[in-house]
Length: 118
Ligand code: SF4
Image (cartoon, rainbow, N blue to C red; front, side):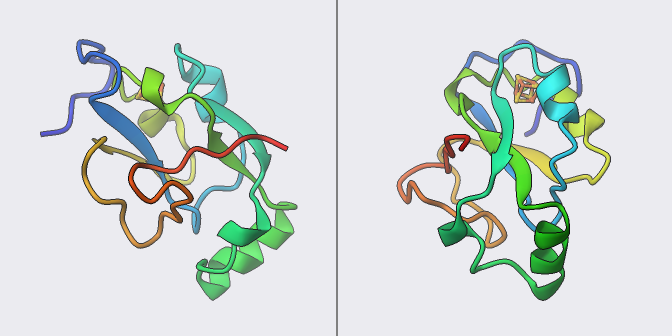
């Protein structure tokens, strides 16, 4: 069961934010609200753009491929602030060992993707 918003009682590493690449527009709200510096906004690597929907590719190009990147995912305490703050409803929380949804483009197949900002 996912935690309630603002409930920061989870230890780090139990839940992890999942970013829907077809929705994210890199608006940085998650960067501003996260108390644990889980996010950065940077350029989505080209190898992660291929699996986007047609609309997702249009949106990505329109925003110069700026998206929220997980730079410190293991620090997530599942407070839910990022979920609540995202104007595109692009962030959900999932247990770290659950398989990523199809809309998440994994570069770390064994775990959730971590993307270094460029
Ligand atoms: S749930 Fe809280 S700790 Fe986890 S990434 Fe979102 S804002 Fe940061």
